[in-house]
Amino acid sequence: QEFRPILWVRPNKKDWSHLDVDMEVKMHIRMIEDGIRMMPDNGKVSQFVIVADARGKNPPIAFMRALLIMFTKGYPDRLGAILAGPTGFFLRMLFRLLKPLMPKRLARKIKLMSLQGIRETIRS
Image (cartoon, rainbow, N blue to C red; front, top):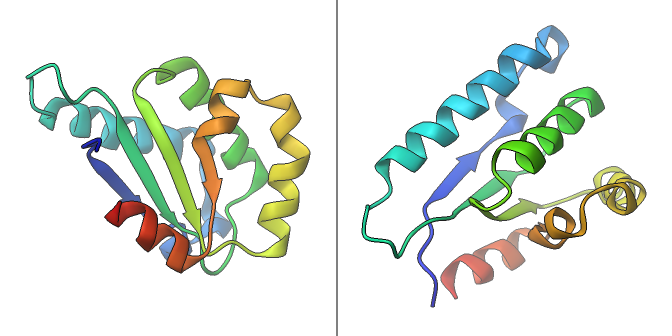
């Protein structure tokens, strides 16, 4: 069993109509860096998991693209998984379109799930 800190994000609570993509990405970097600093320095925990509550409105594509670039360049080894759910048709279709353009290593870490699927994954 692996123990990884979880960063829980709730994009449905954001007002996406007034989004500054650069500022939002910097805020995510700050949260991730703070989380990494809180990890135990015992050599056993080196990765984190992001759980995204995907109910409601989806973030703009420009923001999602900026986050993918951030994870690919800034945290390729630290990111253990991204679990997003419950996902709707649009998000699943967008992921299918973007997946071939992503590094395979990152694409394997992204799981679009039902709410029950996320609960089961976190428990195991």
